[in-house]
Length: 82
Image 1 (spheres, rainbow, N blue to C red):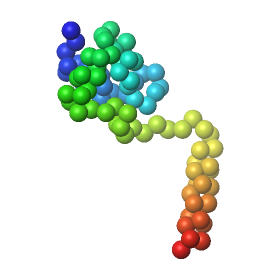
Image 2 (tube, rainbow, N blue to C red):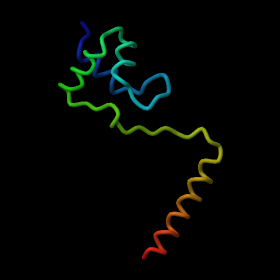
Image 3 (cartoon, one colour):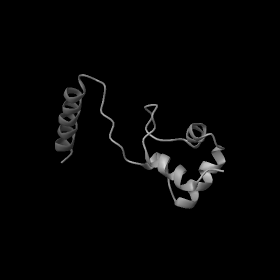
């Protein structure tokens, strides 16, 4: 039986495999437990790991250029609408 505090502690940490959040099955595998145990602990604690906000930098070298281009394009569309 896993300690709930340990499950909650691991849940609040970012996954080590590069994904954005823990799934119950992935966390259960990492802790050597049953995924339903993870679900019960999360439910009792009111946690929704897929809703955690985390910042992940882009690997794309042109990300800043693309993002600023997209922002300019969006502002032009908004200005036309007004």
